[in-house]
Length: 106
Image 1 (cartoon, rainbow, N blue to C red):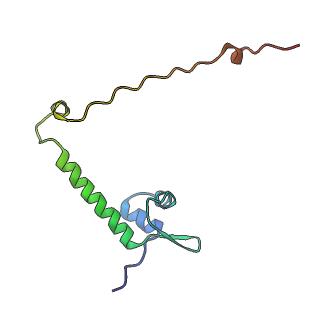
Image 2: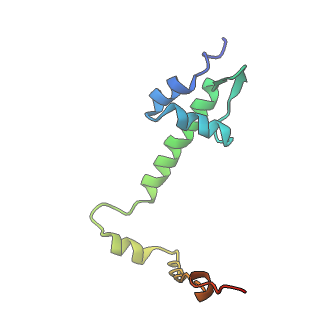
């Protein structure tokens, strides 16, 4: 049996609940398999199905990683094996006084 018809950015955007421009950007960045017919972008149905399956499995993995209901986030953080990242130092913008008050030459 032949593959189902490919999606246009507009039809896929409607399916995924986003804008057609978002779909075009995903394709341009190489995050969404696509092909072109002249200037038109088409997304194979198989590529859409792969991404949707990955999203479902990632969602299931996330749910399995959640702490049991009734535990607080602090308790979950205390039992986490990952160390907390050190806070990043704040950078201070330094400007020279010359940039603000340049001397006149001559």
